Length: 418
Image (tube, rainbow, N blue to C red; front, side):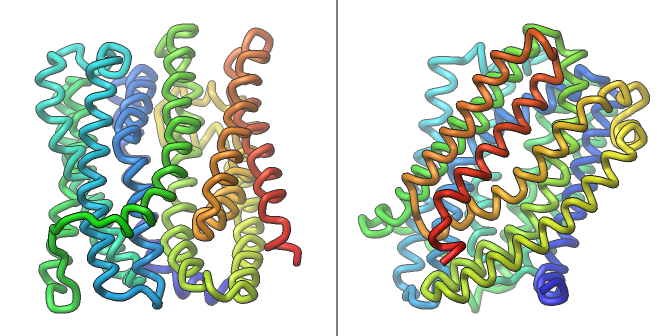
């Protein structure tokens, strides 16, 4: 299993290593130039960005990837699905902006406009977000072909551009500009994806046409699952972080965020390496339950083994790692790693089971699982904050993903243990 998995995922692993190194480099730059305040606002800004990108990524792009990976889907249906996905992506983009800007403008944008007006900020932010959305849609087609090498080369090129843009920007000394350089750098990946399709224009041609009802129905089920991920995931994280900023300030919140961002970095390695191979493979086996069960259980066993080893190494060297990837002084956050690392173990296994619900389009179960884990998190943050301070956040994170893992086991029990 290990040799087969590494063989199929080596290019995705290379791409994600570049993404992880790029992400850690950006964290390091913000930590050195702007300190804990910069790390807190970077996390907050990335969370804001995800409110625009997560619904298309987890909903539309995953639907495109699933149905384009299915050998039973006709070429005509694939192209209609992509066209419908294009228009829905843009509709969601406009609706998300309208909702955040006209109802909660100050809440979502005011922390990022110390040196610019909101209008100046949005002049750069919105076009960059649009290009990020188009990049995700194009990349979902690349992944549906299981052209992991092509996807990897696009990703690596994009990450190099991202780090270069951020490196130039942080040297200007303006935190607002440095934050905006993050989305501008990611937006440049669109042109890397565009080059891929130009070079492969004989194999695949994508056209912008009218949406159709059948494709809309297929996509809507994935969109509902993605909405639950946003409301009960990224939006909730944004609100909790904003609450902690008000309670403890940017500096102390930055200590917690350094540990959370380390989790995000290696979870990115996991989701990028495993997800790029795992989800399309599941989609291709969806009509063969026995083969799908065997594949899922083997991947889970292998991933659990590797995860335990990696997290143990991280925990035993936590002070060194925090200083290495952030800056001197961040070792003060080392006490927060214990519960965060255990929570990450259950988070990683939960991802595999959540992918399974998504691939089998079990929308209600997916949403219920998300709601259950979010309730655990909110209740525990409320109950534990007064006694454990910042450690309450990592304790709540731990139990959130233990609960998420257990309810996913419950929902998948017939499939896993038949």
